[in-house]
Amino acid sequence: MTQSQVALVSGASRGIGAATARTLFDAGWQVSLGMRTPVMPEWAEAAPERVHLFTYDAFEAESPRNWVAEVMGIWGRIDAVVANAGIATTKTPIEITDEEMSRLLEVNVQGPRRLAAACWDALARSGRGRVIILGSLSGKRVKSARSGSYAISKFAAVGLAHALRHTGFEQGIRATAVCPGFVATDMAMGLTERSSKAMTQPGDLARVIRMLIELPNEASVAEFCVNCQLEESF
Image (cartoon, rainbow, N blue to C red):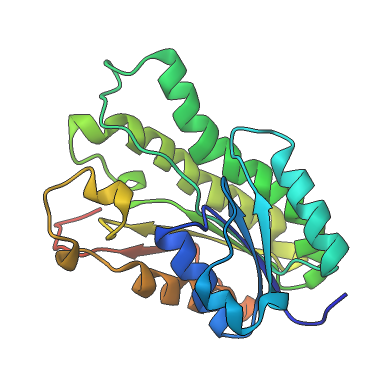
């Protein structure tokens, strides 16, 4: 058992998830990294006892419950969960098949919902549990036909964050939808010709997530939008 704060981060092998895990670790948190292929990151060598690896698969309904059971058995608490794992597509709502749409919703909506549900009792016991849902500015507006199917899933993810915020508010749980535009990750680089230097950096988004997690209950933030470019609205 431990008194140090504990965070679960899904999709922690690279990009936003990896940067968030490292940022929380550097701030003194115990971090459990959900990865499809778990590998201990180099930065964890400074204090490997504060890092836990779990083989997490958003497609598997039992994966979140098994993950939480392991973490509770080791550290005895969960104070924050960052639901970062996600997939993307460039197909329009007309082009996409039923199977492809189901996979998109399974990972981007059902995955975060199941993960939050599995952590819920532990988050409530914390008294200041935190849930971060990685949404997207595509969950705030639809910029193109080919971003449409992905946007549908992210609109639902943002709605999930709001629903969780209402569900857990009296228990001290605060949920936030973090909605970035283009972030310099492998996923984003495959969707645009924009230079990675012109995108929001994963480390900067990780600093935002840490700030949101560490705010007191009286400073609840429902949504936090981050953009690398000027838009008229979103």
